[in-house]
Length: 331
Image 1 (cartoon, rainbow, N blue to C red):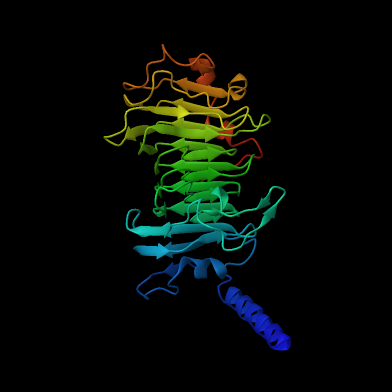
Image 2: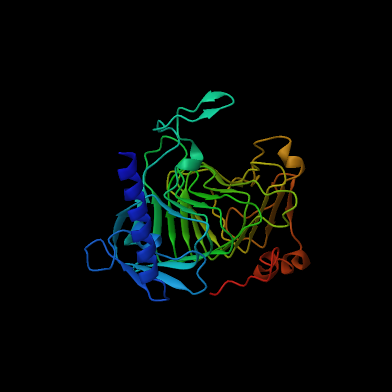
């Protein structure tokens, strides 16, 4: 039996290697649920991509609903996943933090009975220099706990004209010193639905609040000069929503800036929420040149700041993304 298992593993590795060799070129891979593409599942197309590719590889995904829990591993680079239609090309899964774990891992405190926030993702991106275009990433779980749609760990990630659907914790930007660009995206959620330690620039995005709660929960490290920057974005709210905070500091030194954004009347006059009393001593929460009924600054919390014009002019995408190297997203 052991020998048979060894043979099966070896054959599987050989077939995977052969498949990768067959697709070791810059040609586009086509995925379609109706069988008209080379693959019916996105995960299968990701699997045949070669490690550390030096060329740009496009995975073109035709319209359809793809129920897949996907990981783009850290050894994959230069991949673009492009949907045929943003609203009709949907990757969906439905895990939430309070689902009972299939395997019970042990911690210092004892067994873990539930899967927890960080295993709930629909799509986890560990690789770097990955692009998503014209596609929807959804966590379709019931509102029974934290439920991540997008979990990022890689650097130089670009999201263009994408939708991110969920409730609590929709987008988790999971690694400090990594850089992400969200361009013309739609992001919805309830509580802390954009959270984590990464440096992320949101340009021209629509942020939709589905409940009375908090948009962001930054955990920017002290040594990171930038965290979350929302520029030319529009915040909108469900008709039943009456009070929304721009953010609350999940950890010390959390950095969040809203500039040139439309803020609706549902934004609380104080703007930001304390959450952890010690975190407000170091929080870097700022605004500049916002407009709309929620943009009035006379009642903002004392530990937030309004940037001057000169300060705001220094915050550019080029400068923010040069923290590690001279990355310039190819838009």
